[in-house]
Image 1 (cartoon, rainbow, N blue to C red):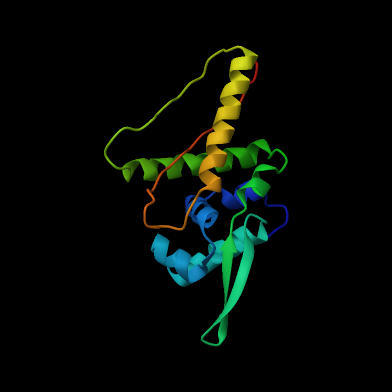
Image 2 (cartoon, rainbow, N blue to C red):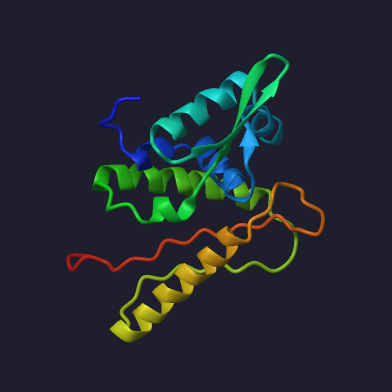
Length: 170
């Protein structure tokens, strides 16, 4: 992959966002990702290579299968979260992919209560800092406790959050 393409641009595709989510809770091979997302093995392998080349996922292990080698991938989300700020253009590409993926997820949500919040307002800096810390804590709690797909006793959930200070001209 061209080194000039940023990490966010590589992740700025709804299918690759889904792959990152899967690989947070489990180390999976391309064949397993393909089965879970109903893709061809070739398509899953292609997207996994893009994510690996961008440094978003890593090979967790390799195993010999029928004379070949199957790589198992994982996403270490804390490493991704620690990267420097993206360019505005890359951030917009990533945000658009998240928005598209959120629409898909909302269509597949179960009946029952959901938290939906959208806010653009003025608050005290201390309130903002508390909200920021709570959102970071909630995200960390979910990522750190993610399990492989369909693990007995688990539920399939979504958390999409975007929290930031607005520019002065807004």
